[in-house]
Length: 322
Image (tube, rainbow, N blue to C red; front, side):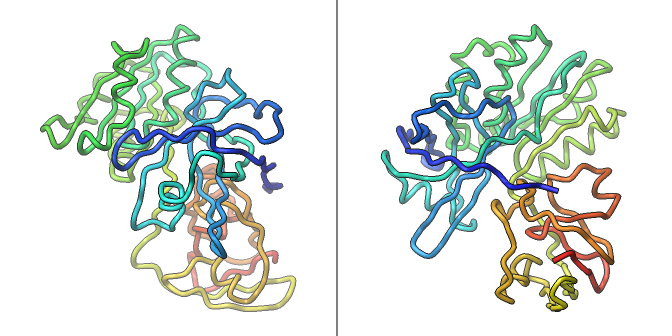
Protein backbone atom coordinates (compact mmCIF):
# COMPACT_ATOMS: atom_id res chain seq x y z
CA UNK A 1 0.00 0.00 0.00
CA UNK A 2 1.22 3.50 -0.77
CA UNK A 3 2.60 5.34 2.27
CA UNK A 4 2.24 8.84 0.85
CA UNK A 5 4.62 11.23 -0.82
CA UNK A 6 7.21 13.47 0.78
CA UNK A 7 6.32 17.06 -0.10
CA UNK A 8 8.79 19.86 -0.81
CA UNK A 9 8.20 23.60 -0.56
CA UNK A 10 9.31 25.26 -3.80
CA UNK A 11 9.51 28.69 -5.35
CA UNK A 12 8.74 29.42 -9.00
CA UNK A 13 11.93 30.90 -10.47
CA UNK A 14 11.00 31.14 -14.17
CA UNK A 15 7.94 30.93 -16.41
CA UNK A 16 8.19 30.62 -20.20
CA UNK A 17 5.23 30.98 -22.56
CA UNK A 18 6.17 28.30 -25.08
CA UNK A 19 2.93 28.55 -27.07
CA UNK A 20 -0.42 30.27 -26.45
CA UNK A 21 -1.53 27.12 -24.60
CA UNK A 22 1.65 25.84 -22.96
CA UNK A 23 3.86 27.32 -20.24
CA UNK A 24 7.08 25.91 -18.83
CA UNK A 25 7.67 26.39 -15.09
CA UNK A 26 11.00 26.18 -13.29
CA UNK A 27 11.06 25.48 -9.54
CA UNK A 28 13.79 25.80 -6.92
CA UNK A 29 13.66 24.17 -3.47
CA UNK A 30 12.97 26.63 -0.66
CA UNK A 31 15.28 24.62 1.60
CA UNK A 32 18.32 25.46 -0.50
CA UNK A 33 19.13 21.76 -0.68
CA UNK A 34 19.14 19.71 -3.86
CA UNK A 35 15.93 18.13 -5.09
CA UNK A 36 15.63 14.32 -4.89
CA UNK A 37 17.23 12.46 -7.80
CA UNK A 38 14.97 11.22 -10.59
CA UNK A 39 15.09 9.36 -13.88
CA UNK A 40 13.44 10.16 -17.20
CA UNK A 41 9.70 9.43 -17.14
CA UNK A 42 9.26 10.55 -13.53
CA UNK A 43 6.38 12.77 -12.46
CA UNK A 44 5.69 15.01 -9.50
CA UNK A 45 2.41 16.07 -7.91
CA UNK A 46 2.00 19.85 -7.75
CA UNK A 47 -0.24 21.07 -4.91
CA UNK A 48 -1.94 24.44 -5.47
CA UNK A 49 -4.09 26.40 -3.03
CA UNK A 50 -6.54 28.86 -4.62
CA UNK A 51 -8.54 30.30 -1.74
CA UNK A 52 -10.65 27.42 -0.45
CA UNK A 53 -9.96 25.34 -3.56
CA UNK A 54 -7.05 22.91 -3.51
CA UNK A 55 -5.71 21.31 -6.68
CA UNK A 56 -3.23 18.45 -7.00
CA UNK A 57 -2.04 17.67 -10.51
CA UNK A 58 0.56 15.24 -11.81
CA UNK A 59 3.15 16.60 -14.26
CA UNK A 60 6.14 14.91 -15.88
CA UNK A 61 9.57 16.25 -15.04
CA UNK A 62 11.30 17.48 -18.17
CA UNK A 63 14.49 18.96 -16.76
CA UNK A 64 18.00 17.49 -16.73
CA UNK A 65 18.20 14.76 -14.04
CA UNK A 66 21.79 15.81 -13.37
CA UNK A 67 20.78 19.40 -12.47
CA UNK A 68 19.01 18.88 -9.15
CA UNK A 69 19.02 22.55 -8.18
CA UNK A 70 15.84 22.87 -10.21
CA UNK A 71 12.86 20.94 -11.57
CA UNK A 72 10.94 21.86 -14.72
CA UNK A 73 7.47 20.96 -15.92
CA UNK A 74 5.27 22.14 -18.79
CA UNK A 75 1.56 22.76 -18.33
CA UNK A 76 -1.01 22.84 -21.11
CA UNK A 77 -4.01 25.05 -20.34
CA UNK A 78 -7.19 22.97 -20.17
CA UNK A 79 -10.13 25.36 -19.82
CA UNK A 80 -12.49 22.40 -19.30
CA UNK A 81 -10.31 20.63 -16.73
CA UNK A 82 -10.49 20.46 -12.94
CA UNK A 83 -8.90 23.88 -12.52
CA UNK A 84 -5.25 23.11 -11.80
CA UNK A 85 -3.88 24.04 -15.22
CA UNK A 86 -5.94 27.23 -15.25
CA UNK A 87 -4.53 28.17 -11.86
CA UNK A 88 -0.99 27.52 -13.05
CA UNK A 89 -1.52 29.66 -16.16
CA UNK A 90 -3.46 32.53 -14.61
CA UNK A 91 -2.35 32.77 -10.97
CA UNK A 92 1.19 31.47 -10.67
CA UNK A 93 3.98 34.04 -11.06
CA UNK A 94 7.72 34.10 -10.51
CA UNK A 95 8.10 33.96 -6.73
CA UNK A 96 4.89 32.00 -6.11
CA UNK A 97 5.32 29.31 -3.45
CA UNK A 98 3.93 25.83 -4.13
CA UNK A 99 4.35 22.28 -2.89
CA UNK A 100 5.80 19.49 -5.02
CA UNK A 101 5.92 15.81 -4.19
CA UNK A 102 9.04 13.73 -4.43
CA UNK A 103 9.29 12.23 -7.93
CA UNK A 104 7.84 8.84 -8.80
CA UNK A 105 8.46 6.94 -12.02
CA UNK A 106 5.71 4.78 -13.53
CA UNK A 107 7.06 5.29 -17.07
CA UNK A 108 10.74 4.41 -16.91
CA UNK A 109 12.85 3.22 -19.79
CA UNK A 110 13.44 -0.50 -20.10
CA UNK A 111 17.00 -1.34 -18.98
CA UNK A 112 17.77 -3.03 -22.29
CA UNK A 113 16.27 -3.52 -25.72
CA UNK A 114 17.08 -3.86 -29.40
CA UNK A 115 15.60 -0.40 -30.00
CA UNK A 116 13.43 2.21 -28.23
CA UNK A 117 10.64 3.98 -30.14
CA UNK A 118 9.16 6.99 -28.33
CA UNK A 119 5.76 8.30 -29.48
CA UNK A 120 4.46 11.61 -28.10
CA UNK A 121 1.14 13.33 -28.65
CA UNK A 122 1.02 17.06 -27.82
CA UNK A 123 2.04 17.79 -24.23
CA UNK A 124 2.89 14.09 -23.92
CA UNK A 125 6.36 15.03 -25.16
CA UNK A 126 7.49 16.12 -21.69
CA UNK A 127 8.55 12.78 -20.11
CA UNK A 128 10.63 11.99 -23.17
CA UNK A 129 12.89 15.05 -22.89
CA UNK A 130 15.14 13.59 -20.16
CA UNK A 131 14.76 10.09 -21.60
CA UNK A 132 16.37 11.12 -24.89
CA UNK A 133 19.56 12.08 -23.08
CA UNK A 134 19.46 8.86 -21.07
CA UNK A 135 19.18 6.75 -24.22
CA UNK A 136 21.97 8.68 -25.91
CA UNK A 137 24.23 8.18 -22.89
CA UNK A 138 23.57 4.43 -23.04
CA UNK A 139 24.53 4.30 -26.70
CA UNK A 140 21.08 2.84 -27.39
CA UNK A 141 19.23 2.77 -30.69
CA UNK A 142 16.25 5.12 -30.39
CA UNK A 143 13.92 7.47 -32.25
CA UNK A 144 11.19 9.94 -31.29
CA UNK A 145 7.91 10.53 -33.14
CA UNK A 146 6.17 13.74 -32.04
CA UNK A 147 2.59 14.31 -33.24
CA UNK A 148 0.34 17.30 -32.56
CA UNK A 149 -2.77 18.89 -34.03
CA UNK A 150 -1.40 22.32 -34.90
CA UNK A 151 1.84 24.30 -34.42
CA UNK A 152 0.61 25.83 -31.14
CA UNK A 153 0.52 22.33 -29.61
CA UNK A 154 4.12 21.48 -30.57
CA UNK A 155 5.84 23.51 -27.87
CA UNK A 156 9.13 21.63 -27.78
CA UNK A 157 9.70 20.89 -31.45
CA UNK A 158 12.06 23.88 -31.96
CA UNK A 159 14.20 22.68 -29.04
CA UNK A 160 14.32 19.16 -30.41
CA UNK A 161 15.37 20.44 -33.83
CA UNK A 162 18.27 22.27 -32.20
CA UNK A 163 19.26 19.36 -29.95
CA UNK A 164 21.77 16.55 -30.27
CA UNK A 165 18.80 14.26 -31.02
CA UNK A 166 17.55 16.19 -34.07
CA UNK A 167 18.32 13.43 -36.58
CA UNK A 168 16.34 10.94 -34.48
CA UNK A 169 13.23 13.14 -34.08
CA UNK A 170 10.28 13.13 -36.46
CA UNK A 171 7.39 15.62 -36.45
CA UNK A 172 3.75 15.16 -37.54
CA UNK A 173 1.31 18.11 -37.68
CA UNK A 174 -2.33 17.24 -38.39
CA UNK A 175 -3.30 20.75 -39.54
CA UNK A 176 -0.58 20.61 -42.20
CA UNK A 177 -1.65 17.22 -43.50
CA UNK A 178 1.23 15.31 -41.90
CA UNK A 179 -0.28 12.54 -39.79
CA UNK A 180 1.53 9.82 -37.89
CA UNK A 181 0.97 6.35 -39.37
CA UNK A 182 1.22 4.33 -36.17
CA UNK A 183 0.66 0.98 -37.84
CA UNK A 184 3.22 1.63 -40.54
CA UNK A 185 5.74 2.76 -37.94
CA UNK A 186 5.40 -0.25 -35.67
CA UNK A 187 5.23 -2.80 -38.48
CA UNK A 188 8.75 -1.79 -39.53
CA UNK A 189 10.42 -2.25 -36.14
CA UNK A 190 12.90 -5.06 -35.44
CA UNK A 191 12.16 -7.79 -32.94
CA UNK A 192 12.99 -6.71 -29.40
CA UNK A 193 11.90 -3.09 -29.88
CA UNK A 194 10.33 -1.32 -26.90
CA UNK A 195 7.60 1.21 -27.72
CA UNK A 196 6.63 4.06 -25.39
CA UNK A 197 3.64 6.37 -25.82
CA UNK A 198 2.42 9.39 -23.88
CA UNK A 199 -0.42 11.64 -24.96
CA UNK A 200 -4.18 11.63 -25.48
CA UNK A 201 -6.14 8.41 -25.07
CA UNK A 202 -6.88 7.87 -28.81
CA UNK A 203 -3.15 7.89 -29.58
CA UNK A 204 -2.37 5.55 -26.69
CA UNK A 205 -5.12 3.16 -27.77
CA UNK A 206 -3.88 3.22 -31.38
CA UNK A 207 -0.31 2.43 -30.34
CA UNK A 208 -1.33 -0.38 -27.98
CA UNK A 209 -3.68 -1.91 -30.59
CA UNK A 210 -1.04 -1.74 -33.31
CA UNK A 211 1.69 -3.13 -31.06
CA UNK A 212 -0.55 -6.06 -30.15
CA UNK A 213 -1.33 -6.74 -33.81
CA UNK A 214 2.37 -6.78 -34.59
CA UNK A 215 3.03 -9.18 -31.72
CA UNK A 216 4.96 -6.90 -29.41
CA UNK A 217 5.25 -8.60 -26.03
CA UNK A 218 3.22 -6.89 -23.30
CA UNK A 219 6.34 -5.95 -21.35
CA UNK A 220 7.67 -4.14 -24.45
CA UNK A 221 4.68 -1.74 -24.57
CA UNK A 222 4.86 1.25 -22.21
CA UNK A 223 2.32 4.05 -21.86
CA UNK A 224 1.40 6.98 -19.66
CA UNK A 225 -1.68 9.20 -19.57
CA UNK A 226 -2.47 11.57 -16.69
CA UNK A 227 -6.01 12.54 -17.70
CA UNK A 228 -7.75 9.32 -16.71
CA UNK A 229 -10.97 8.64 -18.57
CA UNK A 230 -13.82 6.61 -17.07
CA UNK A 231 -16.87 5.29 -18.97
CA UNK A 232 -19.63 7.75 -19.78
CA UNK A 233 -22.22 5.01 -19.16
CA UNK A 234 -21.12 4.35 -15.57
CA UNK A 235 -23.77 3.04 -13.16
CA UNK A 236 -24.33 3.82 -9.48
CA UNK A 237 -23.35 1.32 -6.77
CA UNK A 238 -23.08 1.06 -2.98
CA UNK A 239 -19.87 1.29 -0.96
CA UNK A 240 -19.70 0.02 2.63
CA UNK A 241 -16.98 1.36 4.93
CA UNK A 242 -16.16 -1.66 7.10
CA UNK A 243 -14.47 0.17 9.98
CA UNK A 244 -17.36 2.57 10.60
CA UNK A 245 -20.28 0.63 9.13
CA UNK A 246 -21.26 3.62 7.01
CA UNK A 247 -22.80 3.08 3.59
CA UNK A 248 -22.91 5.47 0.67
CA UNK A 249 -24.34 5.28 -2.84
CA UNK A 250 -21.79 6.35 -5.44
CA UNK A 251 -23.62 8.14 -8.24
CA UNK A 252 -22.90 7.58 -11.90
CA UNK A 253 -21.28 11.01 -12.06
CA UNK A 254 -19.30 10.64 -8.81
CA UNK A 255 -16.06 9.00 -7.81
CA UNK A 256 -15.90 6.77 -4.74
CA UNK A 257 -13.63 9.36 -3.17
CA UNK A 258 -16.16 12.14 -3.69
CA UNK A 259 -18.98 10.02 -2.26
CA UNK A 260 -16.97 9.12 0.85
CA UNK A 261 -15.93 12.74 1.36
CA UNK A 262 -19.63 13.70 1.30
CA UNK A 263 -19.94 11.71 4.55
CA UNK A 264 -17.25 13.93 6.12
CA UNK A 265 -14.93 10.91 6.22
CA UNK A 266 -11.33 11.91 5.57
CA UNK A 267 -9.36 9.83 3.07
CA UNK A 268 -5.73 10.56 2.29
CA UNK A 269 -5.49 11.59 -1.35
CA UNK A 270 -3.31 13.70 -3.59
CA UNK A 271 -3.54 13.58 -7.39
CA UNK A 272 -7.20 12.51 -7.84
CA UNK A 273 -6.13 11.15 -11.24
CA UNK A 274 -5.21 7.53 -10.46
CA UNK A 275 -1.50 8.24 -10.73
CA UNK A 276 0.06 8.72 -7.30
CA UNK A 277 -1.34 5.77 -5.33
CA UNK A 278 -2.08 7.81 -2.20
CA UNK A 279 -5.76 6.79 -1.96
CA UNK A 280 -5.09 3.07 -2.44
CA UNK A 281 -7.55 1.16 -0.23
CA UNK A 282 -8.02 -2.54 0.53
CA UNK A 283 -11.03 -4.31 -0.97
CA UNK A 284 -12.75 -6.62 1.53
CA UNK A 285 -15.73 -7.69 -0.60
CA UNK A 286 -16.64 -7.22 -4.25
CA UNK A 287 -14.50 -6.43 -7.27
CA UNK A 288 -13.23 -3.18 -8.73
CA UNK A 289 -13.21 -1.88 -12.28
CA UNK A 290 -9.73 -0.37 -12.31
CA UNK A 291 -9.02 2.87 -14.18
CA UNK A 292 -5.80 3.93 -12.45
CA UNK A 293 -2.25 3.88 -13.80
CA UNK A 294 -0.60 3.05 -10.49
CA UNK A 295 -1.38 -0.64 -9.96
CA UNK A 296 0.23 -3.25 -12.19
CA UNK A 297 -1.93 -5.55 -14.31
CA UNK A 298 -1.20 -8.34 -11.83
CA UNK A 299 -2.26 -6.19 -8.87
CA UNK A 300 -5.46 -5.18 -10.63
CA UNK A 301 -6.29 -8.81 -11.40
CA UNK A 302 -5.69 -9.78 -7.75
CA UNK A 303 -8.52 -7.45 -6.65
CA UNK A 304 -6.85 -6.76 -3.30
CA UNK A 305 -6.92 -2.96 -3.47
CA UNK A 306 -8.12 -0.05 -5.59
CA UNK A 307 -7.73 3.69 -6.16
CA UNK A 308 -10.78 5.51 -4.82
CA UNK A 309 -10.22 8.58 -6.99
CA UNK A 310 -10.92 6.92 -10.36
CA UNK A 311 -11.83 3.24 -10.06
CA UNK A 312 -15.36 1.90 -9.67
CA UNK A 313 -17.26 -1.26 -8.69
CA UNK A 314 -17.83 -4.08 -11.15
CA UNK A 315 -21.06 -5.00 -9.39
CA UNK A 316 -23.64 -3.39 -7.13
CA UNK A 317 -21.63 -3.38 -3.88
CA UNK A 318 -18.10 -2.92 -2.56
CA UNK A 319 -16.86 -3.29 1.02
CA UNK A 320 -13.71 -1.29 1.72
CA UNK A 321 -11.25 -1.30 4.61
CA UNK A 322 -12.16 2.20 5.79
